[in-house]
Length: 458
Image 1 (spheres, rainbow, N blue to C red):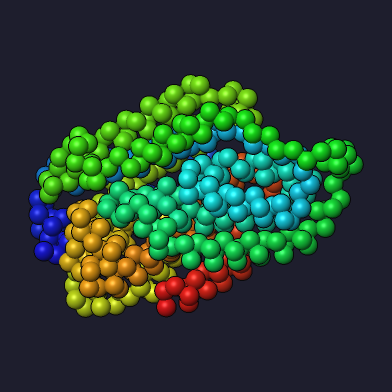
Image 2 (cartoon, helix red, strand yellow):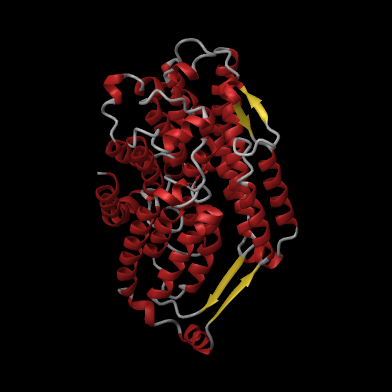
């Protein structure tokens, strides 16, 4: 049965095209609001995002009389928001500081360390954990390019190996992509992307003439001893609980209780309860020294939670309409892995990469008349359908494009703006939106993305 038919089985035969307007409006505001009318956007974005999401939800419930898709979307959003929030809280209670000479090699080591731990605590958690120590370590020589490459590596490319690493991959995991699929199939592009970006950063950082001329007081302190300070070790236990709970999937363990939905869909709630409780206890017993040292605030994660509420619900009609389009033989024949890589990637750079991933996974599955809402069919798609290995390459293209292109702009991935804001609070003069793109993304990041396309997708 074609995917569009499955999704629309409980609704009128067609979803009206105008219903994608709230989604387009929200994404457009996310892109332009912080740049052109920042005060209005920062004070009103919660109302706008929730209002647009509720508008589309109301249309589905009261006009289309569809309760199945909204219920499934709510379950996905809850799992997504709870995991991100839990990781954010746990990482916020871990404080790292260093007294060392900030050489290019040490900076590369920090970026590589961030790229590794991003797969355990997420790009949001790793960015929050390391950006302030990274700035403090380089306080006598901090430059905008250092923060930009931190965004490239720690906030984006690093999180390619597990569903915990980046929001798009976690959505894929929730839909049925095996947890270790990313580690099995994306290790080579992860290594290529991070090795190339670190090499470029090392060259740029070696040219930073302030590297070896810190202020006398700073130099005296550095020469006295080289030390690393770590506060908040107990949070590592809570991190382990939060990450371990990720595997509590009722689709994998029959003994777990779940909420049944139409089509045999099992909605998890045990996993989410465990993660929420761990996050609450983590915050309650966190080291105040660590929280104060990180200037911990719930504002960044609340922004993500509110924005994604609107994104998840307004993108429902976009998913259905794109599935209808992809199920036509004429259009489906044009959807090659290279098309998925460049189009999904380009949109991830100017939109948010999580809904872009969901939309293109829907498109890719519709090409083979598969149901995006059926976790068993997503699992089969991720494993090449047994006889159609192209589906494996399509999912690789969507996954790599969605994650890596998220670094092309400040709005491609949630942590990007958070890192920018923290850096500006610390006195770093960050490049404006278009300067970030034309001076850094197109010059340094795009060639790396093209190389990965040639090596992995073409």
